[in-house]
Amino acid sequence: MSDYGFATYDEKTGKKREGSVNSKWPIFGPRYDQIKRAFKTIHFTDTKSYSIRSASLSLPPQNENGAKTEYHGYEKVLIATIPHGYKKRPMGYATITGSFNKNTRGRWEYVRQFDNWGLWPASTTLNSTRSESGVMQTNVGYGLRPLETTSARDAFYDNLFQNCGMTYPNDLGGYPMEGLYIADGYFYVPGNNSSTPDDGSKPRYPYTVEIDATNIYVYRWYYWCDVWTRVYYPDGFDIRGRFKGIIDYAGSSFDMTIYLAPYSMEDLV
Image (cartoon, rainbow, N blue to C red; front, side, top):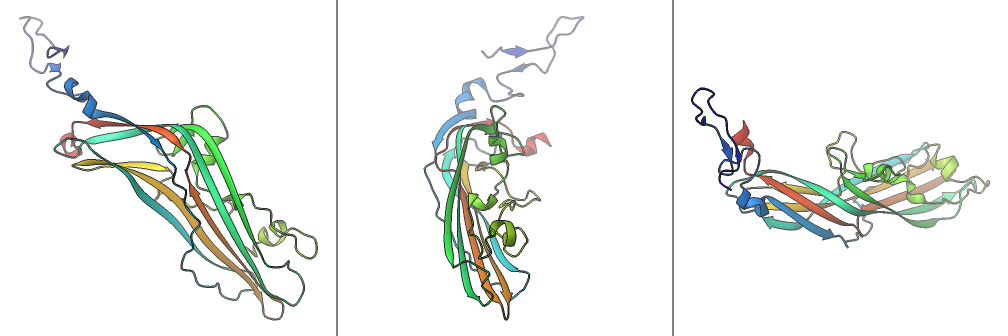
């Protein structure tokens, strides 16, 4: 095995030139006797479900056209620490393949503080849950993508709340609040509102990997928001709606394959 590889020979002398490649000099990867350390496939079953959370928000100010205060959370949780056995931080990457569940839960707490004009329905609290699933794999730079072309790609591309599939009550005139007041901008309920910034500063991935000089770290991410809105007319009404949403991946079952190269970034500069 020590002679495995390739070499170049001098055309005139027939002697082997310097620079042969074999298992002693792992130009293209790990030494052959260290394959098990360089490649690690670990199976994960995620059973962690997160509860809806509340941020420290102030009541929005009085505003006839609607006012808003909001918070968007991106939570990173360590789920595995794996020693890699190298004496320095190796380069590496990870791929993920498996069955994924994406669970989006929402709660809308609506309060009719007063309504002198008789426009609004009574106070209520709505809850909803939407779950989507797909057989997925990592897609560099774009989170997860399905192994086959399906609608799961859209569901897993961004972390959108999309109103959590709620059916809002009708106002007293018979029009649905969702279509009239919410769509017209009085109430802000996260629809195409993402818990991932458009600038890409936070990951879309549900799971990520980091490597230091000692260990491989596997993280779970979950996403949440708390958005409070208020429509206020001094002699008319004071209406308040607060939406809280959370996204987790409980029920996912997947293989994560981690490949470590026996170099650091400094070796390649």
